[in-house]
Amino acid sequence: MSFTIVCPHCGPRPATEYGFLGEVSAAVTGATLDPLSEELYFNDNIAAVQLEWWFHRYGCERWLLARRDTRTNEVHEVWAADESEAPAAEADASETPAAEGTTP
Ligand SMILES: [Zn+2]
Image (cartoon, rainbow, N blue to C red):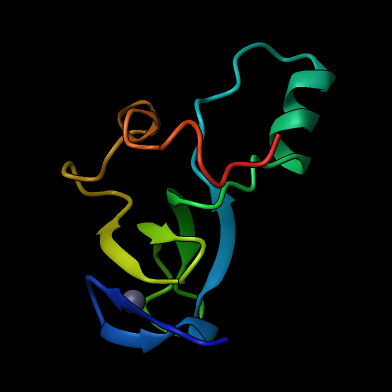
């Protein structure tokens, strides 16, 4: 299934131009291996709108943050990751539904 992501620098482009780097989560603190491995290899995989990292590899080669509905692939908002308006991971957690459609 293909969908479109509107890059703040390049405009609307097919999702195949981007690399998906996973959901945005709170930063891992501490240098022990277990929390870092957990962060890198185990995503929450929710069925809802979530904040995600994307890289425009066949365009401007910049990092983006996108708020995407994982059920429909509808992309609601996109920000350049280096912009001050880009949301932080903690801010997104309050908008994630806690019940319906989440996996245990
Ligand atoms: Zn771009």
